[in-house]
Image (cartoon, rainbow, N blue to C red):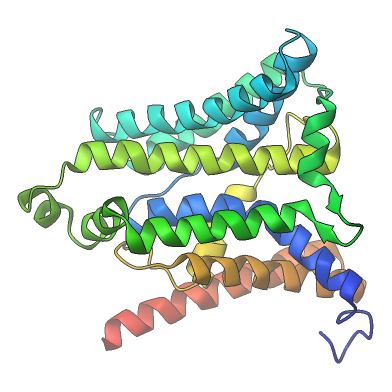
Amino acid sequence: MAILSPVFLTTQNLMNVGTQAAVVAILAFGQTFVIVSAGIDLSVGSLAALSAIVTGYSATNLGLPAWVAILLGIATGCAAGLVSGILISYGRLPAFIATMAMLSVGRGLALVLSNGIPVRQPSQVAFFGSTLGGWLPVPLLIMVILGVLAAFILNRTYLGRCMYAIGGNEDAARLSGINVARQKLIIYALSGTFSAIAGLVLAGRLVSGQPQAASGYELDAIAAVVIGGASLAGGKGRAFGTFIGALVLAVIRNGLNLLNVSSFWQQVVIGIVIALAVLTDTLRRKSA
């Protein structure tokens, strides 16, 4: 990209790449927890939109203080993730079905609360999409902080070890004394919480809550995790790899935009990259 476009390696453009990657990366960090534990979460994009709408609705229509509205928006994402976890752990629904249902419910509630139109956000939400000191994008800073937090959870906590154990062999994890159902509740609640924060970052960038925001982002989040080296079979994945995966997607899109490549062809390229990443993972596991 640097060879094809002299603008690509400029400081401003690299900051743009980081900002563009932020929302997908934050969603993907939460998705990493789920995929490592051999699950899938298709609701992250819808929950991001719903959390932003709840925040704006609470502050604008209900008159709640901005910080309360923001906390309520984050709690909404956490609660929705918890419901998905309950359906999976105790309702015995496949993760694909449970989170697909939550995808529909979350998007529907966002449309109901907003009447299908953008919702004004409190001025404090604009901070999530602003720039510090005239050069450091806040979305980029939040992405890094949450990436470090995700890495800490995966590598340094009991919950992280449970994620790898459940993803490696759920029956063995259960027999070893891990409360699999409870851990799955926490995992999906974490995914919903990360989705809510991503929704606030996106709302800060758009300066409004869009009920159709983050549509299709769940696929980008899954793609970032897989490109970053995680296995859809579970038991494998790293926060840093997910971060790299999100950057790869952002670099491809940014570079193709600089080269004036049609957005339709960009989808083709992204699809090929995802297919190659999964194929590489499959061949690597077979050779192992």
